[in-house]
Length: 153
Length: 256
Image (cartoon, rainbow over all chains, first blue to last red; front, top):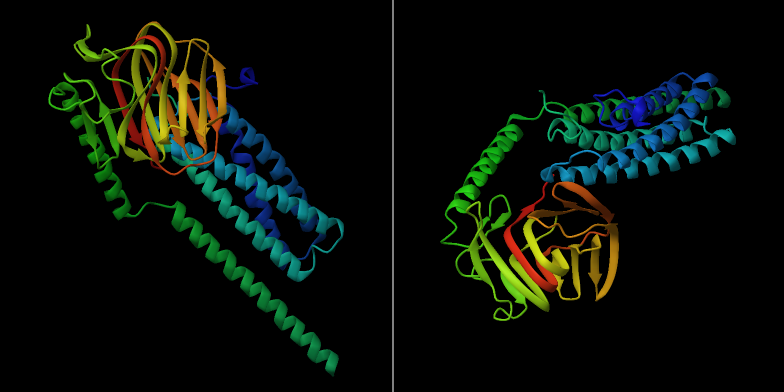
């Protein structure tokens, strides 16, 4: 795996981390569009995107677990690293449960009902808040404490 | 006629729901932008002041290191960090001998080749516990030590409540491990093969939330997980036979 990475990359985590963020935001946005514009292809797309988001989230979480022991974490960044790992796990668990419930409703073809669709959208939006907290802590690790970066020579 | 009225009511409720979702979405966007956006000037000023204080703290620490004849340990209340270096009188500073016989230990202070003072302790199967008075919750700690023909364990203890309840990072001639003593029972968070180094070495432990890490000479050896605990005291635990030399110990309060 390490051989596939460019020399400047400390590990796979910084490359993978943007995928779940982008996919989840897109899924929630399309879910919102679906509330207004009731098209079947939108409903299918949202379900597919959430499934991919969980997969991408799992891979990213595992890469993060591997990354934290391979990079130098300054002592004053340890607590931020700890919170980042915890919030990442909460986010992953949340979207895993959310996607499972969503898939069940999709399979039973009741996810399109107005009230359920709004609830699903709001739950997705709440998940975005967890995602934002995780991403904020991750950004802090890199841009405040310089974790995973190298000094300019 | 009734059907037309019902249809109109349904349409009205649908448009109300759409309006609510739009409002929620817009509020969420505003919330996200304001929380993740540019920091307020107050926050920036506070952070700059904190950084300046930290820099002053470090300067203060190095000054203390140079003039530690007067006091064995320096405590920086503002940043929540403590640094200990030996002085002329063993166990007279903030790092107190809690377990062990001071006379049997044959404690003496000498000066190392680099000019720093060293506290030497000779153990003969004893258990020695040195603790700071202050308590810490999330913490990082460094211990600079050296052993000479020592057989036993050198450990940093933290979240120390009593002899049966504390967390530790210990290094022996066979392994390095992170663990917890809970009501006298030992629970190992992580254990790796390792040995006591022959020269001066730095043992580092961090306890951040549920994550515990142990490093030797800056190299991460252990990473374990355990439930968070309320704050406790921090110190050094020595157990075994032989000579142990201590040069420096520092404890830092970790903040986000």
